[in-house]
Image (tube, one colour):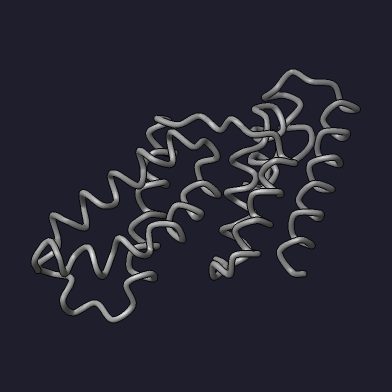
Length: 164
């Protein structure tokens, strides 16, 4: 694939992909870094791209994989409050970007919660009891229950926004 063919196929979809990067990363500068990584990988694989039928879908999968590897390596710490995540997801969905399955979106939402909420909800999602969470965190029963209740409410609101 020539540089001109690459530009015609992939540069025009940059705005849609950038919206996905923003929804997953939450920081403009980091989203630009992710996009740069994506386009570098695409360029390196340009000879393999001839058989790709759905450019946006292919790029989107690559982009989400790059985001996931950054989360795992903790190269990017979530910077958003939960309400901001909901607002960005609303913006992305309003632009017609196809939605991931709900479980994946909720997991990404939980990953962006403040540390205490994220830790407690992750433990609960992995099957920990309230007593186990109390023991692991050193928080009081009332504190853990309040955090779980508020976090569940945020997740419900997030889910309802996804299904509008």
